[in-house]
Length: 348
Image (cartoon, rainbow, N blue to C red):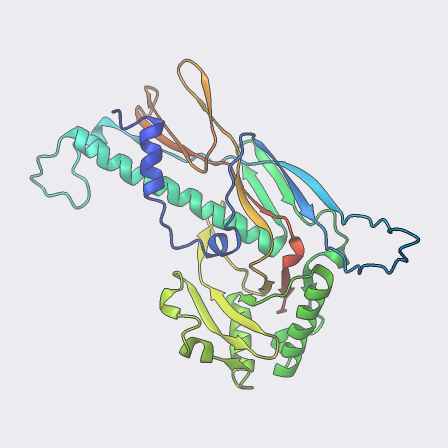
């Protein structure tokens, strides 16, 4: 079987999908449907109501109640398609870690190069997915800029500013005391429950927000680490970069930080969680990381594939000449119940 066919490479990609830098994606976007269209239709579910059943005399009959509303959005899933070139010279040279007097054939080296290239390309796409999920959670939008793309997918666009799940504090925490911080968290937690019907259980902190909380709340003895001691949360089993800092009894929140970075398109390193923000989160909110339909152009026809990753390969004679390996994907993070999360601009 040809190792460069889409079918063969797809099995290699699926086997190698093990990344430790996707905590936001893996925790809050566990639903991963694939679609057989490039445009993805989804429902944004409203806040919901708290109507109670009316009393009605049997002689009068029933009372008609209106259904709670929702809004249908449609976005075209943006495509990412990184690729690598393997030249004849690459197949003849010794690979890193290979013995100097190795008897490997160029074909054997080509197979090893293919495996590493697929793994690297998959990691690059995975990191892009994590950035998109972070943007959706902390900004309410996903910015898509690149070749042929210049748009913003804004999930909060239909909301008035006061209805958006984001609060800019009047008194920032760097100039507030512990009582003020705890009061703000209680108020925002209560507001989230009242406006959206979701009870937040987690507080995800940027690095500077975390430092402020640790400095002020630890002194006030508000952080309880007994859940770690009793085995409810095991720091040894948390993903790389994720740290559990304790339980805020006053507001019923588990405090986490996520130390992970990425290099943006301008070449600047950025934190996955903005330093001066934190977020109240309910893992039960409806979300999904959807994947749109991918098209591959072959020698005879265009073929369409439904999936999270679709590898492709061909021989190129133009400069640089060699074997091209590419992985295509069309990921789109979607928060259907946007009031299941609430962003706090906590620091000046």
